[in-house]
Image (spheres, rainbow, N blue to C red):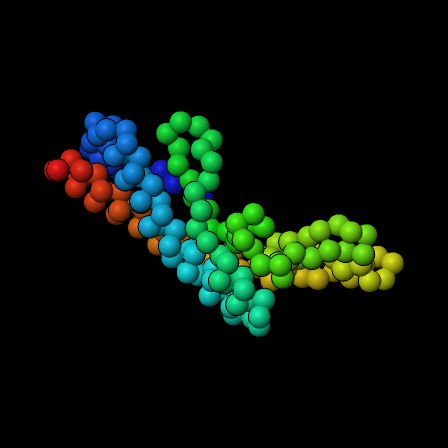
Length: 158
């Protein structure tokens, strides 16, 4: 989800007048605050849509992480499940008869084929991330702009 703050010309001027380190901190905090409702909704969806032990595991290991910068001045974060290097449980990793590894939360989110039968058996998606992003979009945008505005005004005063 990309967001552009509109109607904030005076905020933009104040943000550019602040030190780079302070401005970066304000933006990072605002983006993190905006994604918290999405994180909570994704965890709830994992528990309810998937259910059972796997739903609880996915909810427990769904986190908010900073993403690598694509260009100077851009900041992004993502709600995602932990990767193997971040300590994802062994239950998240599956292996086919041929030895190919797969990530179970991704298979649940997008759907997959099982190796049974000549053509395989299609298993429908049971998404938990996409509905969370869709239902909390407006709330996230509002929270980012409010937090950004408050942070800029506070930094400009102090």
